[in-house]
Image (cartoon, rainbow, N blue to C red):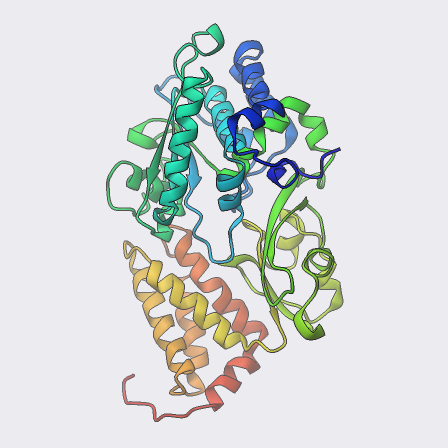
Length: 426
């Protein structure tokens, strides 16, 4: 059996070429669903597979599709390729090296919800990928795999790419829709949710690149085959993005439920110079930090339930490892600076709160902080939590709150390194 479900290009050279993809069973699953299955059957098969959204939330994909009302038309499907989370680089590998599997997945999702138009929203820095995808889409149209009356049926589908302008906030699905409509990329108030009022005010499904890439093998081999990987509640495979203090950073496709220890030491080659793991951010910069003060933490299965049970979240599985040389105040200052820069400014707690958290952490890094600034930083974070329009504000405080709670001594140590006088009112 093949080692890969999603990163098949690592085993099959030139899989990004249409003739090679077709030779290895490409678009057979799409042809099967269009010619042999009703849309509801496709939705039910994906529900049965237990596939959960790979963009971060982990919501069941088939259930998400079923929310679209069948008395409001047209329906749209949008592929979220705005991969902007620090530490996340899985979608880019699929887009660059296995694009046809993504496109086939998008086509299957479109048929399942009877959408005749689908969009791929890419972050602004992916302009070269967008150009390549346009070429791939044109190839599919020429081959009769995209377009009108597919396989002699009444089903028609067209796909378009759309480039954002490099804003992290547009990874949030409603801000993505606003940007796709040509508006300022800022989150919408919810409800209504995109399943009812999405792109151009019509029912819309938004799925992540990795989520969609799972669909062709599921529809080809069946839900039970897919459930042979992973755990009962978190079935299937996942691409884990490993970075930070590891010898072999990179993308690793593994069954959900693989432990942190196995990812870091078996696949990632361990920590440089044999140092110990101090902390893990399992979902990139937006993670609640996990303190590795017990070896049992490393044996935690990386699935949605187990990571939540130890006080964090799996998210998009962008695992950043910090070893014992890392001061967590420094790490937190980096995450805070990122979120301050990326806040869209629509809601006051996020706009003002990220500014002040960044002001305080930069003061710490510049050697101008006092001990009370540690509590002040925690206080600002606590006032942001639960008061924002979208998840960015919530993400911005994750590392701050958990960092101070679990590594307070690091913050105090940073403050003690005061090298400059603190100006009044700073």
